[in-house]
Length: 141
Image 1 (tube, rainbow, N blue to C red):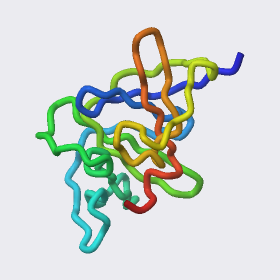
Image 2 (cartoon, rainbow, N blue to C red; image 1 turned 180 degrees about the vertical axis):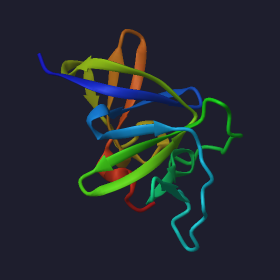
Image 3 (tube, helix red, strand yellow; image 1 turned 180 degrees about the horizontal axis):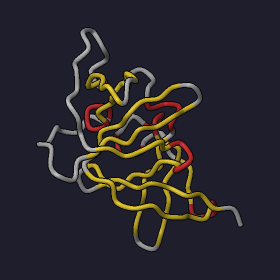
């Protein structure tokens, strides 16, 4: 049986997952430089060891209210094809394995969110984990 390994994180009360193969690293929130005329969900850029990395606010991307940064807030640095970017999350939860059989494809009406960013929902016991489509996170609003 095929399985996937995910890094899971929270945005509010929802739990999300990204493929661990795409995760370069997880960092605390550094100073973020705003970029004029960037899409609203692009919070700005950071300097990570000499590399300029765009940072996506998933809360803004998904139309969720912004919240204060906490000690648990993190940026997950992802590499998708040749693009490297960060996603700001409320907290990183864990690394886990999920059987491919336990993943349901996403539906267009999915939670009123931008469903193109979602590739499915993983079911682990009573937990539901929204799986992000890495290729779509950087696409337009």
